[in-house]
Image (tube, rainbow, N blue to C red; front, side, top):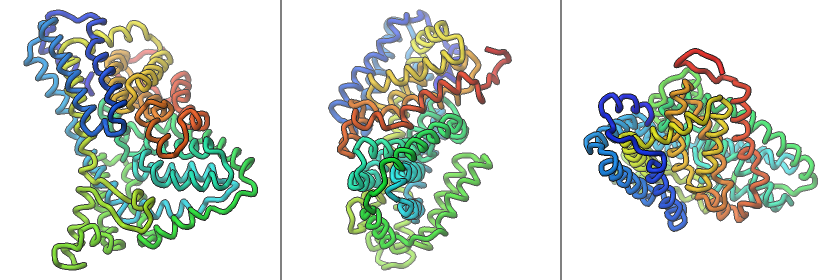
Length: 499
């Protein structure tokens, strides 16, 4: 996205003095250092404002250098920032629709029904693979690995350890499944972020991800199947799963009819209906099913309504609250309470804020010529397809280690490599896919990364203990390089020519 405006900007503005590569690294270094300390101090709360402030500080440093050392006019920086922010209009609407969708899918009973039926397949002999599959389904439906791990993951962790599986194996299955959905779900903020900052249509990005994601999860499921059949003999029944299913059945009207919503959504995605329309229709359809099957929950969310009792006024109030804001349902089970809690549109505001601040930083880097200067290093150093993808994946992993946050890593990687991919004639979806394959899934494998710290704390398993068993997370970056070596579905539409 950022690099898309590079050519237009150069046509309108001439940079009096091109910054050196060393000088161009200063704003990036400031950003990395400040983010490192921010994540250390604020942890998972860093995205609620601290990271955004850091981005604006780095933007100020970049602008100061541009004006004082490079002679760039302030008006040029403003235009570049404005151009970047304009490109976020549709992604922001998509994020808001995703927030509404996540709330309506939960309260309508779509997600609870999928969890309910998923828990029915739990059996000791196939526990590990079932655990991974359940987390795949939940994370795809919720779009959040953190929510999946913190809710159903905690339950599965208890069941697995009670059945005699080691903590590392169970945590690895949970995390592998959870990050599958975090990587490909249209409800995932990292998926939307990777697509938006590279200028790739959301569903184009998701479809292209399947080339590397399907083989990675396939290999992962085979490993967990073999391990479960070897280790699962003689294990006890999963009483916690039964209890969780009972609570869901008591709290929601569990019915296969609500699965019409994801089926219709899948059909729209397959027919390439624009993302905004697909998400909007899906959210409204789920809202209709919520009114039909879960009216009591809507009344509870409305807090008793507006004096009309359980009538239309209270139901309407509950439905609008579900789409727009946070919801909390009392089920009598703390774990289920956390699972079914939603944030609605309001829950996406931190991500939107983050994207806007990132666009400010990217605009300043473009106007100053610093992004072009950094990109030129990669253009000169990387000439072949495999080397480009491998360098991108390696840089993504390094950013995860140094920046310690997957959101910031995706933004920085896209900024650094966007123009490189464009100049070499590759589609933006190759960059967005490589970013997801190398950043989203590996963030949880780093102990000091915000994801690694959070999941280790929630599951009670040290990062280095579960790391060897997170097969999906380990295989994904390897798979993206392998597919690049094969050249499957990698084209250069901008110009003809062979490697």
